[in-house]
Image (cartoon, rainbow over all chains, first blue to last red; front, side, top):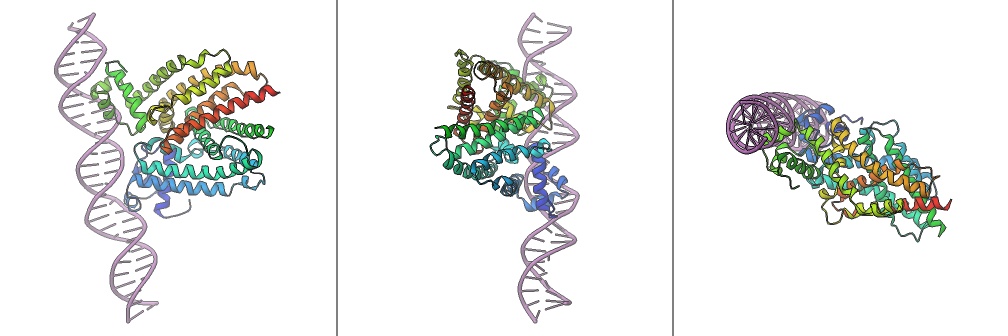
Length: 202
Length: 202
DNA sequence: GACAACATACCAACCGGTCGGTATTGCCTC
DNA sequence: GAGGCAATACCGACCGGTTGGTATGTTGTC
């Protein structure tokens, strides 16, 4: 955020404006105004608006990747504890944030562009799948330790966690209230607990 | 779909185009071309593009409301069976459909317009909340019969089902493959079963 | 002949993108 | 370390097409 160069100022402006208004509704001029740079600077660094969106998706993945890498849920020894703490961490990330601040750039962008811009779609997929992969690693370890014979796959459960989060964001946007998202995340937490509790009984 | 008048042709064109390209990327001219009418007809029936979107949301709610009202899951006597059959029905609705055909207009539109157009947001909320209410009725009955002392509320679980579906659609769009959505719906089904199975053990 | 249901022609604002130019930086040579 | 010079970073006026929206006609029906 501190960077003074036009490129990173434009990328951060994109995170803010696209999460607020969506990709199509965000004009290049809006991004330039928000970033405090001119149109010339925009097209010097990005060959098109779509190119900026792809770069913004990568920028987002880098920022959130660092956030989750340094998050406290890794401290637990038991991977199942890590998983539950991850879900709690996701719920905690909603607190005190407005809807544009709390929601996911990739989910917002891919919803608009999945048919019209494969480049943006792929950039969003890479970010979502990459994060899901790190969660799948935790789930895999938890499964090996606590539910080795369970029929569900770690990868599928990891993607499901992301689906719940993305869906919770949509409900929050419709209600114009982030609180409803927290309730859905609570259901996700309960699901994970039941899933492993059930497995342990076998 | 059969209606020959310009208004319903425009509404059906809106369902198709907005689900494919989103609200902002769908131009009034595109809608007129798709519907086979002129711009004059458009602005005769709708005072603005936003007005069309609000009407399209209501149109969507009416169509899907009728679809779910006549769906076979109501035939089960036990409301818990109805709920599980509803979830299976939602999974079945994905089969043989392209992504724009399988996804939800309201979730797509509200993602783009929640900040910029309260009228569209409210129309989307009404449709989503209305459908969730009918599911909440089934869940309430199932809870009374099978899990009267459970701590979760029927309303919250009903909203969670919608969150999972909306999130599954986003993952499907990112992957450009509807299959992933089915897996998330399967997790939802397992959650409901575990939730009631767990309650019965108490 | 009034009124709804369209069609046609048109407009001003806006949009993504271009282009010619300038300021700043980094590097090479002596 | 001074001078030169090319690449990079940035500026902002401008362009042509597109956009949502309007104003005015035409047609069919009760």
